[in-house]
View 1 (tube, rainbow, N blue to C red):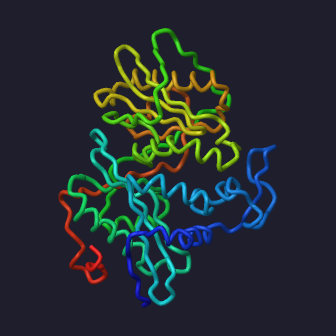
View 2 (cartoon, helix red, strand yellow):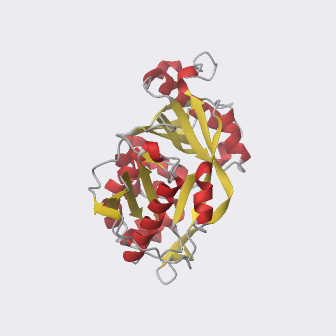
View 3 (cartoon, one colour):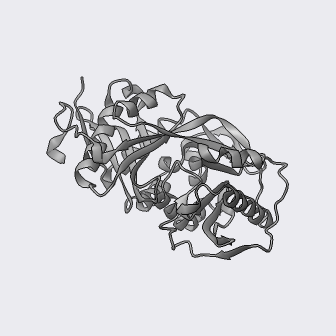
Length: 346
């Protein structure tokens, strides 16, 4: 078997990381502004940074990747697997650190794992993930958990995490706001006032978009204008992002609108207050209606214990549901005695 070394990403690796992610895009397409979707086939070189982003995300365009790397490196780390024979990067894992109120807690959340197609089913995904986890166990002793959110129907991805001792913890449902959803009004009993994007909602509990931690979401909001400028203010990046404090009957929370997502945080003690959360969601939709943001693509990610609220609001559920996997770091056993652990770099 080819020798694989796992190490932390260096800035000089970014071009190779872009090539790794480009391999995942089978076909490239132009952006069609009339439909707001991808249109005719194209070559990579003919596309703008915005069009490359639409085809393959943040990681397939050099200018976009530079911004993305700058965005996450202060709150996270990227680890890569390098083939020693070819000096090629064949896999990566991205981790974001965030301190959240319970039940989330102080987490190291895995937000991205990718193995080159030709290198899959050789144990490389497990190797790079275990290396990253070992680094966290040794160097981030203040954190409690390692988390990730995945599609449970992707058996190969589930297997990688299970072999790294992450187990299903909770179910996450994705809810879409129907296109014909009645417009909600912000009534007098709800107070909304703008908050600065730089003011992260520390100490508040996420009740939406559970696939990324608060630090990642807030950094994305902070960098919104930079990405929007790079993308020439097209598509979802043409609408300005806004953040608000919301107060209702003494309950305090934070909402932000980054089309097509809605991000919500609430006081930890109100996590089971169905009436308050329902009012928050309704007020958020009302706010978006006032800003004339199309409702057709808006979505919420909620834990299973909030499903009843979404059902009462007549939102549409996306199938299959996602699984929130978790591993308790405090009770972890290190991998350093296993033969594939690269102890020299720890």
